[in-house]
Length: 279
Image (cartoon, rainbow, N blue to C red):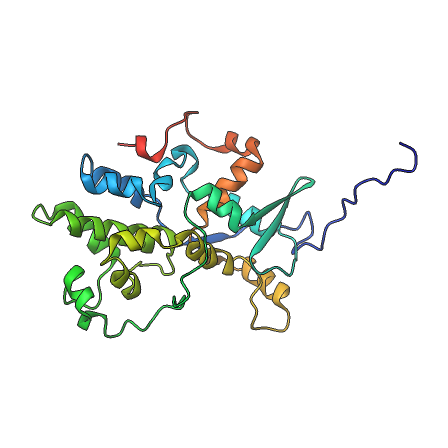
């Protein structure tokens, strides 16, 4: 129609010029391979069925072919992001289209609950220097202070006398601390979550989607404590390595949905297997 306004396709400024994207490595702490490990070690048990019926069940339905982490794809979407004020939304341009990565997308991809935190919930992690003196820690982890999630994996795989409830609790800790809230190279159980998992029903009702998303998005956006946040993020993305906490695989899975052609880059036969289907 004559005189009708065309859509304004102008976009906010980008972090990098369209032909100046850096290519660097990521140091990703999340270990999605924990999920097929739990699937295998708890096979045919009530504990595995409980997990799959819980809020974490959707993680086992993720497409296995798309789940090996691709640092190149994640880095591409991070470097193609637009500079926007919303701290909890990442807009990335691929081709001529902008792709949004925010809490609703994260919840849809992972199937995790993303509601509000309880009124009295503290999002900050507490001091763990005296963790081995906490009764809940001793009951589940033992009297050692420095225990890694690799240690917990080994116990879950080898301790044939471990009670089913304890197996369930350790598996839940591994899912949260090694997959969703991973924030260090050698992932360790978090004291706060060890306390929470004493009540497994309440633990599985927690909004883990919101908790994981906040941990993930905070390291993808410009930092706040500097004069030039966007410039600082540019410097970080140009480093040889860049640390990504939380569950950055969600951004990769969103990329595969938004740009289906990217799936042709996966060096694996085309199939519809989920993580639950893996041996």
